[in-house]
Image (cartoon, rainbow, N blue to C red):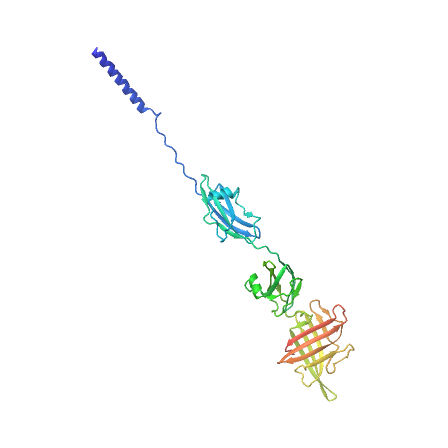
Length: 376
């Protein structure tokens, strides 16, 4: 009996040992390792103001690693500082963007008002990044004044322009060489010349400019509400050869030849003057009672409508004159009568030509030379 019991116990131990060995070698209970998931990269967001008007602000958004971007535009506080805004407020009260490649424009704002723009971005894990510093923008003042600059013209010494104002209480202007640093509206208002009549168009012809020089015309205006406006235009003065304001042709060169003749015991000098610039040339012969053929005698020389053939008499102009428009090569043939006045001061001559023409539309031929004629 004891021997049987012992066999049973040994059999049971053997069975348990096999079960234990089988359990230890089974693959069903192997421990599996979970994969490591990396967090999404942090989103970034930046803003930059592109344009500001009286009622709008335009800005750009630059965001990286972002799936959602929102901005919140709000007025500055009473001190002009940025209000305290949380990132949750930006998403709850702000404007969500579906795209931020193109500039964003916010309209219907108040003029002359400072605004702050906040922004926040979420990455794909929903982690929020708040902009480091909000950007600020101040809308412009509404301009309730206008200026038109028109009829820009010039002579060799004047700049000519017309100002047409609307709604201005103060207008000032300043004309400077184009190479001068750009002026501000306040500089023009402080330094410029005053316009008395601000209710109607006014044409100005300031004088004293250099020939063949580029100038900038500045016109500044202030409205009844204090709004300021600045307008500019460009002008270039003409050559010194061009006509003056009243149509007088400025001659830059005069050469002359001369001869002497004795009549009835008197010495007569004949001066043939050749006037020239780049656009005109003229020739006149003058007669004078003088024994000096080297210097043109001062005086008034007359061209009579009743021509005197041959050499001119004392203080007369011969009828063999010639005036040519070099731009058209046309000879001026309709001069009727006139005079040439020769004066001299401080060793320098002034010779003024004033001839009356038969042309009703262009009734005069006027010219002037200042300097020293050259004897040939």
